Image (cartoon, rainbow, N blue to C red; front, side, top):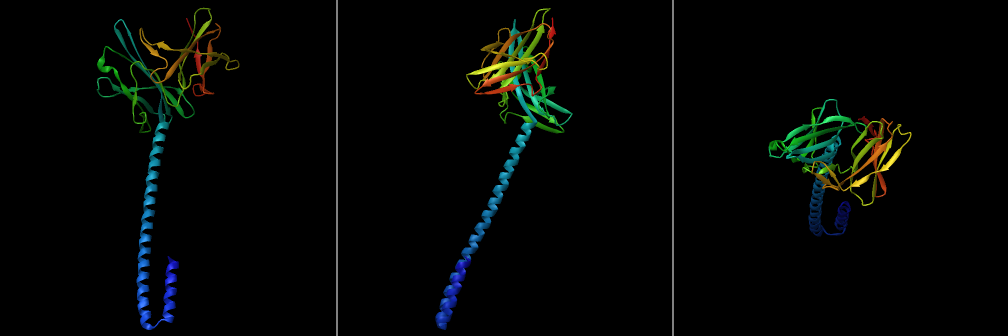
Length: 316
């Protein structure tokens, strides 16, 4: 714009030298109108640019606000998450009930804390809080909490419903894992649900001996069905890992949870049950183990967050 103005001024000077006073006056009036028009255009352009800058700044601030919200969600998820949920129903001679168990991981942000499953009631009454208990450490800075709840079908107004969320209270703050706003939902005979970021988890084990006979180590594992060709193994040791043993677990197409109740494998959450009974020398009193899951060209481990699972023999 500066170049245009300079050019116009040059033309004005040129004509002011060569033209008569009358012609010069007319020419100057025309040039003045053109210059005023150009100045008006420049003013409009500057206004538009200023508005654009303001709009860009506002948009940037809105984006920053969105990022902060996402970071807030991430930090909440990092504070508490559901690791596993399990449901089963059983009945025998006309009586029975529903069992629900939960494993939760929380960030150890303070000594005083409360870990709760906030659960619906089947009768659509007020939701109830089921308090979890401390189990042990997870990875550095985190803890595992768990609870097991059994309710008889004889008391219909106390039977839990399908929906639940996880609540964690620490340092005066409350954090939630509500399945990204959708709430968790489990039927009465679903079996195992695993956190979407988790593909393998031990599902219980026993280690017992009878008299002087060899002992029995019985182990279960749940894995997500993410590939047809897979191997699930238990790796264990009797001597603090100086010597290790490996056994392949066997796929269970169903498993019994009650007198006449069974869970199919894979279940409604695409989780499979694998298991194995292993004979152990009678003089072994302690063992440690971990679960390995080979699938899709990689091996995934459940080694109890680096602590391994430890068992002491029960003698009968």
